[in-house]
Image (cartoon, rainbow, N blue to C red; front, side, top):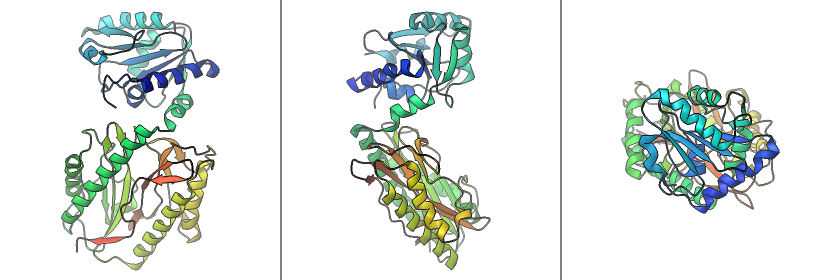
Length: 377
């Protein structure tokens, strides 16, 4: 989605949100810079020392508070969308916030926010401008708005997967014993950009070899690869603001039999999870299917995280594929299936694919081989 693209779909998204507010007891939504603001307006702003806040009230025109230097981005805003710009003197900012609050009528209302996104900086200005307002979490309403992707969003995610897969395939020939995790991650980032990823990657690649591969969220280190290592690579690309998030595990030369065994189990668990992803079934069904394979093989205690998480504009969003999540899967929901087995201080295996629920099942956007391939020998 490009800036200044105030297409009917963006107006539709704003209306979908504000029409639901009265039923949830919320009078206005306050969103700061981030994916949700982009989703609702097509505008992109960096989090910085200058606050940016979108105010979407029920039954009244929306407003956006932003620095004067960012106002060029507002060209093409639809009628009734009011901008409140401020200069470089922070002493003038509270007055601008008060003007925006008065325009949207939220002085004594209930204001919904993103609890994992709204910073103290923006919240303090809003509270000072509307001291009688009550601020509450709007996480459920906001998550529901973005959970089911439309065809344009799925197309962008599909392209993000293609870019990521192309980048990894270009990186693999360079991997060999003696190369460090950090060197491999650097090469992978270069290849992601060459393949067409947006400049802002969804996350820094995880490249973890040997005992580091037993840490699901390891950071690339200066440890050199050694023959017999397992090598976990978790990476992703961005395209038009939508992301991919994939993982594959490799063998550096020949590995011990147990490593090959757990790799085969994780591959089976990944397949079971993908096959269980169907519309009308609870999200936990996917987790149960993947986890069951690993539990029955006696490695359950080494599968230490949920089976997956939603993806879209962020690398972690709803729906979450975990035990206890009874949310029914619906067409357009996109998420990862990423079972793993992690043997402490020895090695680990994870295989991660990206899925989108369809009216009849699920489309797997990723298709790289899932077998434990031997490389670098």
